[in-house]
Each structure stands twice: as C-alpha cells, then as structure tokens.
Length: 113
Length: 111
Image: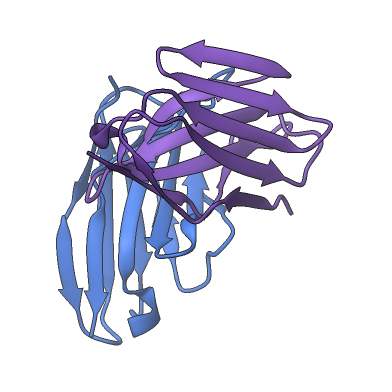
C-alpha cells in the first residue's frame, strides 16, 4: 500500500507568519495533491503536481504556494498565514496513467491565531 | 466547473440495516466515480470505484452508476458500527486526474 507521510502533524502559527507543510511519498507516484478539509466542504484541492519541478493551481490556490523539488516531496507554503487558513490539510499521491485512485497522508491540523 | 453534491448530509441507521448514500455530478463526460471512507481523525481511504454504467459489488458494499442521470450511489448491506464514518464521493472529469469531492455524508450505525 502507498505510504504518504506529512509533517508536522499539528502546527500553531501566528497571523502573518510563514508556514511550510511537508509531504513525502515512497511509492514513486507521479501525481501529488494538497487539499484542505473544513466541515461542510469535503476536500478542496489547493495545488497539485504531475512530476518533479511542476506545480499547478487547484480550485482554491489563493494564499498558497507549492513546491515539488523531487518525485518524493511536495510542500505547501503559506507565506502570510491568516486565521481563515485554519484547517486540516491532507496530502495525497496517485500513480496517474490509467489509475485515478489517490492515497492520503494522515493530515496536518493547522491553527492560525 | 464540475459540481459534485452528496445526500443526505448525515444518516443514523441501526446495526444490520441497509444504508444508501447518493452522489450527483454535473459533467456528463466524467469517467471515474469513487467512494472514499474517512474514520474520525484519520485519512480518507478509497473504498470502491466504477468506470462504466451498472453496478459493482464487493462484499457488503455495492456501487451503482447511471451516467444519463448524472448519479451514482453506495449501498451498504448489513451495516455495522465499524462502518460509522464520513463517506466522500469523488469524480474525475475526462482527461483529468483531478478528483472533485462531495461534501460528505456522516454515517452513524447504532449497535
């Protein structure tokens, strides 16, 4: 089974501060995704990547940047964190090709005060 | 922009009951339809998926797809307390690996 890990698992940040959420996958999947999950909204796509060096905007990219320096790693960066970005963030990976299934990490709970 | 909606928002059923969850989508060219299950405090995990019209059964779980009606569903036979979770439907449009998720149905199975 695909292994996706996230760090940190919990983070408290101050408004205006910079936050970096990290994701690592060990199954050589081409595709990686960042979502946020809020009550009543399901999972909303922030950024995604189809390979090292590439990042694309998802449905709610404002206030977020992403970086994919290698096949295994995908980071989400909040340059100026705001309280509205308080949420649970999930990273996921997927093989691509004819496979659509996504494998999720355990999530990061971010609180911006 | 694909719209995916789930119903009901929440559902409480007794142990042993048949449970039915619904999902509608807006893009008739969608090609992948899936249900993910998320236990409290855990990561979402793929449960079942289907690509073409009809139904697919895996154990106590059955997925139905009707593309013409822009609707698919998940049926759980003999529901168990361990089935209590948030169920998320997901759809991929043609030519895209992006999944659009519904807002979820919170299922509680009472012993």
